[in-house]
Amino acid sequence: MTSSPLLASDPRLEAFGLWQPFNPPPQMFTCYEDSVLAAADKDGNLSLSLAQQLLSEHGFTLTDTYADHHGVDPVALDARNAQALLHWLGY
Image (tube, rainbow, N blue to C red):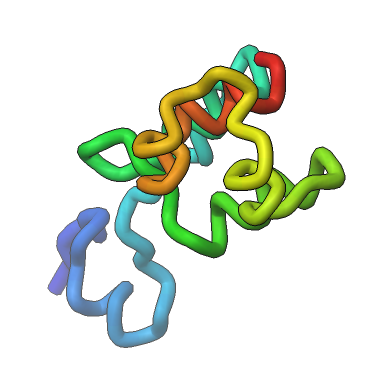
């Protein structure tokens, strides 16, 4: 009796933990702004933790954006809009 060739999703491979679903490599970005925008939700807003991380990487806090909105729409800053935060940071 000859065995059939193993297919990528063959249960025999899965049983031994040898089969892994295809996971594409992480997306590569050509600029910092693109990576920030890609992290935003469908409305273009960052989560609280991501907005805090973005600002802290530049030496600021969300409170700083409220104190001086630098001509950026304060409503967009309050929503943690990625484009607005990048503009506030000077990008």
